[in-house]
Image 1 (cartoon, rainbow, N blue to C red):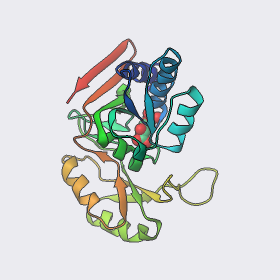
Image 2: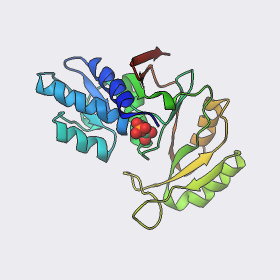
Image 3: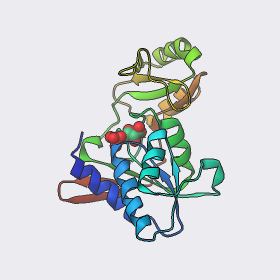
Length: 225
Ligand code: DER
């Protein structure tokens, strides 16, 4: 992955684009965490924002740094969402879910007027090729594995560390990491995965990101859709 400096530059630049009065979707992961910390400092300096967290971790960090919080169903709108990604292609389509938070992330990121991805250079690629995290109802796992196989994917149940058995998401589901190799048509695969019974949410974020802030060793590259 990228360096902490690269991630920090991306996160802090994205936080600068947040305006007074904004409702901000607070993404999950180490890069989005820098944006949340920067927002905490801005709130200390008088910025008036409300954060909508996308996971247990983003909620905890927001509380720690003093960003006021509302639940998703308590806000009328989301002005901007700032979130990381596991991989991003040249059309700003992304694979997310490294932190198994992609179900709630997608609701918040898609609802936002403006969705900004924060990343480091290790995340960008010509074509998406990482495994796609798929959140699955626990009892449907075997059926979904068969459907993923039929779609040409290789599903692997994401196992927990320091806990026997699988990772369990904030929503009580399990995650299959599905390797499809190079994904030439993300939109088609996204539609196929969304149609599989038992799939709660997949980690293909197609046509959602409005901009990406890529933190480099000497600055931030901003790319828009
Ligand atoms: O889980 C997610 O989708 C996160 O955004 C994650 O994929 C990115 O995490 P990172 O910023 O720590 O690489």
